[in-house]
Image 1: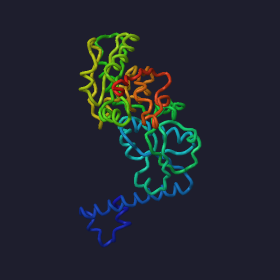
Image 2: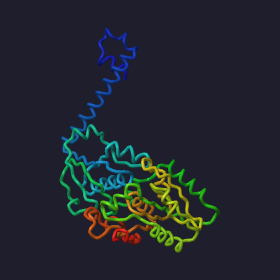
Image 3: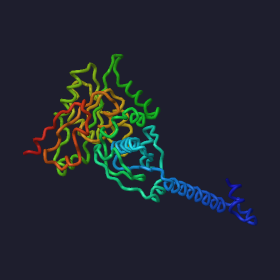
Image 4: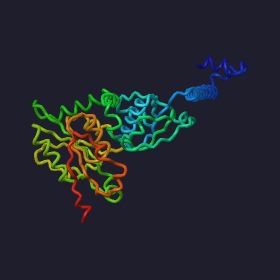
Length: 331
């Protein structure tokens, strides 16, 4: 590279400067500038040749990003277009999963005239035939109605890296007290910012002690030798509200919202799922494919949340809903 740059960019009477730090930095900067310009020119030419470029704005945390990725993947396939993801989405998802969609640089995407296309949280009829070539989808889509028809492909996209699977398998083996078959049930309890938001904004409630007890008893009564693995963004609340009188509950979560891979991988390697609300628990249940118990009817009938959310589009029909106790909102 340096030989090429010396011949291409530097006057012959300045060859003696090549060994200096300044000249090295100068050359590297020129090469990098050329590479960036060539990349930009390539993408502009690509789009000018009537090639499609669909991407989606990365919003929210892990569960949101997974929903956005899966929706982009499915809609692009449905409409025969090419999907790309932005570096921020790739950076966060590729640490955990073997995602395959190509990446387009943010500065290049900024140069292309992308039509902003806001999505509902669920699949709508107009999405079956989207005519735009260059699109930036926005929103927080997280519904099986977008991608359940290509479920196996979505599961393939969200395959864990081997080092994550090996670590989780090792930890699960250590939780077994004997050689008997164990049924692992992952429990995700979403609290944090939702404690105030659900009550004050959406006129809803979160999962309480009673709901979690019912959900856990369902699995205790159906399966032998059950072990519950609890994760949450409020582990202190869980430890004080989830009974462990049978010794079958393990509080394994670290509660770190900025690095959720550990908790998510642990739950997603269980056999079944208890979720409360939120996309994190939803994706655990979707990836596992076992039985999923969820909190249903957690808002009052006139909640503004229902303008954005449909229960029937959020939870698979075969999942088991336990109605929330809305009495705290009705006092």
